[in-house]
Image (cartoon, rainbow, N blue to C red; front, side):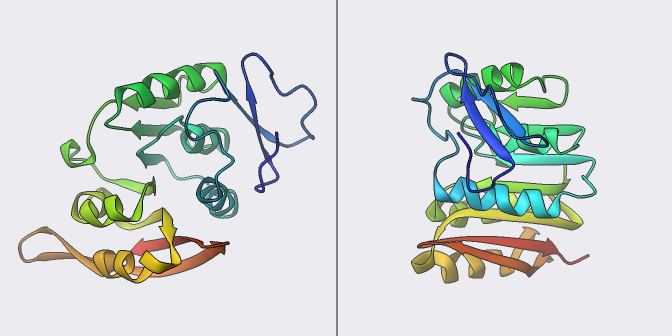
Length: 202
């Protein structure tokens, strides 16, 4: 199955991709019934931006709310040597770990059952494909994980919630008196869905 991000093909352990085009990126999941199997428009928007922008690949990337792990797997296959995939749902983490191994990127991707607010390191790239309400609620924690001059890709946003999300990330505080500022690099749309690529201003 090819996504709208035409280089990415998603297959399943019982129905693997047999004839993907040369140069394509193949992701293998355990079952087509898992959440986040790559067909949703928000995932496609994320993939489109990652395919365009992860060149040259950063040294590290954080995938917040990784679901089935597709974005993390694609990041690794694009050359990111260290990918951290996190989710607070243990079931999603289990599925992501299976997909990581099936897709052959077990040495590059670590899938962890941990909340973003429990991390204390920063990353040159952070990707969060979750609902707008969660993006807003976690704005401070997610923004604090972006390294200076790093990029933050937000997806899962409808046009109706875009202004609220952009406002939440315009300036957030890691600690009182130390604001984290972001500027918009790129906005993409597909139907009612929006993705926002932001850069943390050093």
